[in-house]
Length: 95
Image (cartoon, rainbow, N blue to C red):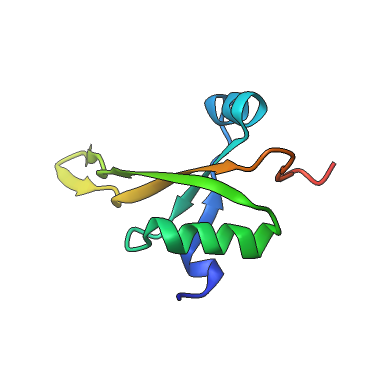
């Protein structure tokens, strides 16, 4: 298994992510594009000391952007929706 910091890149905190977290115990992360659901589950359980019920993933293509005459492309990335077991919680703010 890859190191944890290579699998889980960062938590994604947005209005939609906060609603999912409050309503159905789903936490979102940006993860390594090569990571599979089993690796993501093990990494979240080990890093945050919680029990994971399910992991769903989605791939995003980087947008093509234009700056003047130059064309460029943002990086492709992968998002993981991690559903936690009943009674489990991850607090990113430490409050």
